[in-house]
Image (cartoon, rainbow, N blue to C red):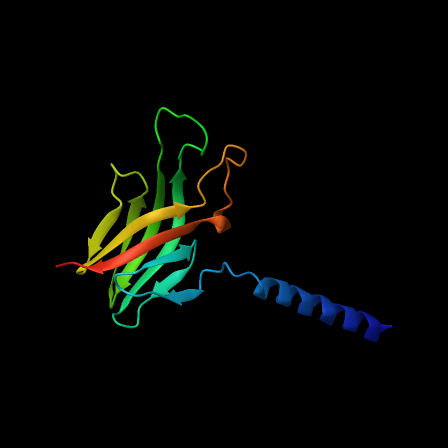
Amino acid sequence: MIMKYTKQLILLIFGTLLFVSCDNHFPGESRDFKIGEEFDLRVGQLAETNGASITIQFMEILEDSRCPASLMCFWAGNAKVSMKIAEGNSERMLELNTHPDMKQSEIFQGYKLQLIALNPYPQKQYPSIPKEDYRATLRVDLVD
């Protein structure tokens, strides 16, 4: 009888660990990027480059007031994201925006980080976007 429950407990623990390990949105996940090329990050994801010691992490969505597609709005709205950029022992938190009249890029340690796009774009029928669905398209360039 005890053996039966022990096997069930082991299967439950194994199943739980397998389920948790399949979640690909954990903050420790990283990817590579190249200076001068666009790349995408999910919330919590870290990007690093081999050619320089730059790392970028998409921390969070601070706001998303963009006008849903197919609607006529007085203002186009804005989405603001928080990014952490680091090189060596220096790091900084940056806030970047999708609206062209707001800060879309920032310079750090001789590199320019630019928010190119934030997807998905809000839709009329789906006004709320789950955090894990967001993808920021970014670009890092050397500053002359």
